[in-house]
Length: 542
Image (cartoon, rainbow, N blue to C red; front, side, top):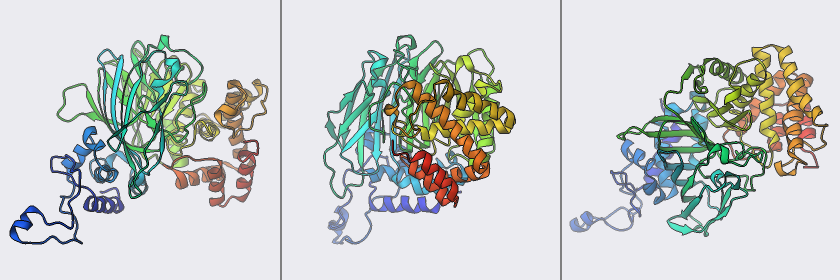
C-alpha cells in the first residue's frame, strides 16, 4: 500500500519537471536545455521537442536513497530535487514509518515540509560531536535562526564551531551563546526560487554533567551532557526555530517545524533517538541510520552496551523502555504504553509508530522530545503517584508539543497545560477519578496556591513571567487546573472533541497560538466552550 496517490503524483511531477540526477545518485547541476538538441540528435539531424519533458531519468530506489543519505550531494541540489527524492521514499521505503491513519495527511504535508539530511559522528570517547547537515527550507526567507543548544554559555567551554552556506555560498553566521542560537542572514533569493538549501557544519565538545552550570534552564538541566553511563543528546543538532528569541533560563526550547529527517550517525555504544533506527547499509558496526517523519526535532541518548530494554508492541504505537543501569525497565514501559493507549483513544493515533522512554540523569523530573521521552533516573518507577504523573505528562506531550506544535518561548502554556490535562485523563482511566482529582489538587491547584497565586496571565510569553516560580505555578499549576475546570464545567466529551478538532486542523502545522485553540472550539460547534477559551486565552495583558 502506498502512502497516497497524491505523494506519488507530486513525486513524479517534481521528478519530471525538475529532478536531474544521474543513475549513480550524483546531481546534475543544470537540467537539460529543452531548446537545444542533444549531441546524438545533432549528429543525426534530429531536433529536440521544446515543449516535451526533460530527458533526465525518473527516480528509482537507489537514486532516491543516495540523495537522502549524501549531504554533499543534497547540499548542491535545488530544493525541489531533494524534495522529490524524499517524496519518492515516502511512498516506498519510508511508508511503514507512518501510521496508516496519517498517510493521507502526511502526503499533504510533506511537499512543503523542511528536510534535513545529515551525517554525524560522535567520537569514541563521547567528548566531541561533528555534524554535517543539509537543510531544505520550504520557502525563500532572508533570515534563519537556528536553535543550537551546544552553543549555550551555561555549558561552559564547549568549543562550539559552526559554518553555514546557502545555495553553495558561505555565510558568516552570528552566534549568540547566551541565547543558544545562531542567526543566519541570507542573500536575497531569486524570485523563482522555491525554497533554500542550507549546509550547516558544526563541531563541539559535550561537557561533563558536573561541569554544566545549573541555571534552572534546559541546558543547565543536563539536556546535553556526558554522565557515567549515558550521554544525553537533547537538541544536539542545530535546527531552524520559529521562536527566534534567545533561550531564557527556564522552560523548554522545542519550537520547531515538523520535518523529514534522514541522518546517519557514527557512534560508540547504543544510540536511541526519536526516529526509527536501523544499521547503516554496508557500514561497519557503530553506524546507525535514522529516519524521522513529521518530527519537530531529532534528539537522542547514547547508552552503554547491555542496558536492559523492554518492548510493548501496541496496536498503534510500539513503546521501548530503557531503564537505569541495573534496574528492570518493564513496569515503567508498561505504564507508558498504557498511557499511550488512553491518549490514543482520547485524541487518535500519532503519525509515527514508535516511542522511546529512556532513564537519564536530569536536573528535573522529565523531558519530552518528538518520538522520545526522558525520565529522571532516580524517579524511574510506576507508583501511581508523582513518578506515574511525570510519565503520563511526558507521553501526553507527543500529542501537544510534538504533533500540535506551539512556540515554547512565545506561548508555553499551550502545550504544558494540556500535557497536565493528559496526565489527569490517564490517572482517571488507570487509577480512577478520585486519584485523578487528588493529582489535580496536589500538582495543579495546589502548586498554584503554594506559590501565592501569582497574577500573571496564562498566555504570557516565557520571558514575560515575573519569575521562574510564577512561570511554573501559572503554566503548570493554574494551566492544568483550568483544563480540569473546563472538563468539569462542560463535560469531558466536549473538551476532548475540541482538542481532537485542534489536532485535525493543525496537527503537523507550524506555530499554533491561542487563536487556533479558540477556532477549534468554534469548528467543533461548541459556542459556549469557544467563549470560555477566548476569555481565558485571549487576555489583553498578553
